Length: 160
Image (tube, rainbow, N blue to C red; front, top):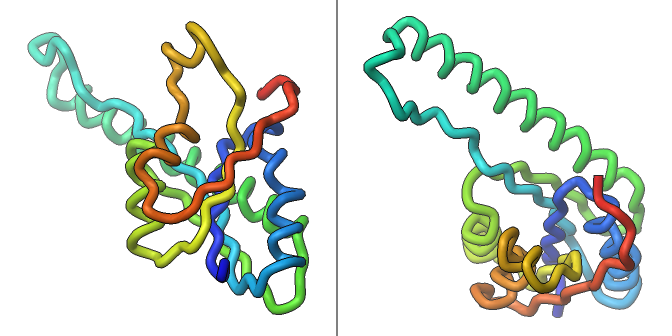
């Protein structure tokens, strides 16, 4: 039933509250693949006042931004590998993916293009103004997903 499970993480302790549920699914279902995913929203390289920036400076800024993006991706890849290495289960393959773009859109795209059967995702439990301002990725994933989504409510620890 659930053979390919995607677990979106954001690097926070709150998001990792989903990991015991991942272990439960591995124990109770014939899971073959767990994919830990984090989506990075790209840094902006747009310039509002291009007349004030020389082409050489613009190129340096773009190159600097590219190097920062590479470092961010590398740090996220290392983080996902550490999380995956904490879980062990016979017959289950673990994979990590660092994606770039709009978080909810990229997660939905990945689910469809990679044949994911289930999404296990933590919800930070924001409400009121915080939810309105920051939005709810988990809620958007739930609304746009074509596969079952298990949302795990975080227990209230502070995210870094």
